[in-house]
Image (cartoon, rainbow, N blue to C red):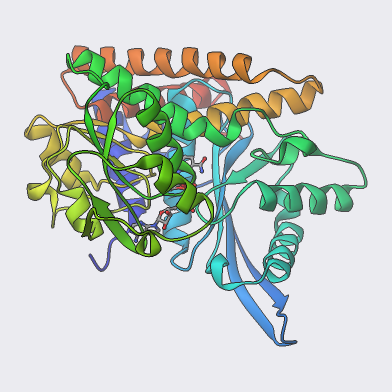
Length: 417
Ligand code: NAD
């Protein structure tokens, strides 16, 4: 879909929620705009001696409820509108699950898999240097997103600490454990997706045990979701990544697949008797649960009529366009929205930051049980709001989130100066 702008999606859901809440334009106008957009040019000396300059962003959508918070994406398609949308989704995600953060996102237009480790490290360090004036444990705290990982967070933490002259572990989350990362952070987003799937199926009188599940994306979110769902008894029938997918209605050997993707290998090199399918085919399979866990704009007006899943749990940010979401809602397909379903990651990022600030660390059991409580409570309030207002789960989530953000603005005394 050319011309697709994910920030239009954001504005549409904010307007819809604000209308339902009875707000005047004036009351919520401010939250339709990111507070700060930073664009940086990041020069890197490549291994062959040449110089390449990459375009990067750090965008803070809101700091009304606390410091800005959000991941850093390394992907060739990164652009300002995508980062703006991702930043706003973080604001509403943190609000809906009730953690004291605003929202931000960063990104660099680059294919990290085409860089050597030295080039990637140099890119990350220079980018950190460029955005250092606007990030910090009290101001804006990055984390991993598509194409970045714990190792990259370690480099950011080091670069920022060197600039400041003291060790600042709280400047990023999703760090390696040895640098103050939290136990449970690696699995947190997938764990949250799994908890949300269980909660939603429970409300619909369905069970995860034996349910057929298709997962798009085999990165951090997709692979962990599929692992935890299969451990909980779900039947993973289809998975995909950027190279395409595989499908077996009887269930795939997920342990074997996990070993393959964990070695950073793509699915097209995985040897199997299962049927080879494309990403579009995966999205349209007749499954109980579909988990889009790759990129935005996957379920859109072009394919929504072909979607046959009973339930969709959004592991990715923005995988369903507004129009497609409305069409699914009309058809009675329940969609657990991204700002609820994938919030486990930022929830444990918040736990990590709290541990960093107090320099006191929790066990994995403690982290997981706190996450369970947080996700269960958020699901309950979204479900109840949807029932009360007779709206979709997405609209309900935004009603809760927009209300909290607008209330914060009012509690601060309104616009100043
Ligand atoms: P990742 O880089 O670890 O994995 C991305 C996966 O998507 C890879 O398997 C890749 O091959 C696949 N992919 C890329 N382009 C694709 C395409 N065109 N079609 C199909 N598959 C494609 O990223 P991740 O961290 O797992 O993030 C995935 C999604 O989840 C993103 O929307 C991200 O914003 C969101 N998310 C991530 C976290 C987190 O903690 N990492 C938290 C919340 C939300």
